[in-house]
Amino acid sequence: MRVLGIETSCDETGVALWDSEAGLLAHRLHSQTEVHAAYGGVVPELASRDHIRRTIPLVEQTLADAGVDLDGVDGVTATAGPGLLGALLVGLSAGKAIAFARDLPFLGIHHLEAHLLAPALEDNPPPFPFLALLVSGGHTLLAEVAGVGRYRLLGQSLDDAAGEAFDKTAKLLELGFPGGPAVARAAEGGDPEAFALPRPMVDKPNLDFSFSGLKTAVLNAAKTRGEDADAAFRRDLCASFQEAVVDVLWRKSARALRQTGLERLVVAGGVGANAHLRARFATEAEARSVGLHFPRPEFCTDNGAMVAHAGGLRLLAGERDGWDRTAVARWPLDELTPPSI
Ligand code: ATP
Ligand code: MG
Ligand code: FE
Image (tube, rainbow, N blue to C red):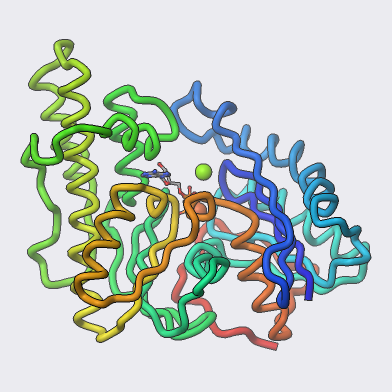
């Protein structure tokens, strides 16, 4: 089955064509970074308008890349939530319109489900069950994944998401937008132990996270130098911040592995693109014989491939949505159920 997938939940327009036999056939991405950079964050109305401009051309380019036309598509899926409502509606409406016009099955997909199944797009896909650490711009959570739609939430952030902590840290250090890659770049060559930053919640026995205090600690450290902060100071501060986030994420993941007895860990979401995180997790996982799976870095952040894939798995199982399917800004992951026919 060949499935066209559309992602427009935030500030990336992503389109892909996924085949249940051959895998990913083509994918295209348009990032709105330049649209929002001047504002230091995503402006929802501008995001919706840009998705309107980009979605259909990206669909045409993706199909052309794959060398097929709409006759070669068997189903359509689009992100239905969670995310920015106006942005979601663009991709969802485009997807429904294409499916309706071509009399194809349609399904709205959960953005976080798409993120956490994305490692299956790579060689050596993770078999179920596994532990998933989802670290994105809007979410930080640990879940036990027993199958498609079988998610048990084990813990989550009580305040900022890990990606949000990167973004806010970048903003207060004036490193630019989006913050994650900017902080990672600024941290290169820095001393991760230069600043004794807190490891919020690690001593609590639960699997929840908190990152807002860490951001405050960075702010206080930055204030000690004020205008005098030179490149070396910033490098060390960014390295220490990055180390603190990654340290907390690993220690909570390790605890979740112990508690559940699971032997495989999947890391997904934008922060999973972080090179320091990938290196630390690889070392720790190898030492404990834990199977570790990441999507390639470009499929950690938002993209159409993960949507075409997750939607494709459900469409393949026979699940369909009616034309009244609408977008939802809030949609808890653990409300999902296995593919329903
Ligand atoms: P959600 O998926 O929760 O709805 P989102 O779609 O905005 O949120 P993603 O696209 O998964 O989030 O990831 C974006 C986040 O990942 C941003 O917060 C960004 O700063 C962060 N990020 C991207 N690359 C890196 C990196 N190399 N290091 C750290 N963080 C990164
Ligand atoms: Mg984004
Ligand atoms: Fe995302």
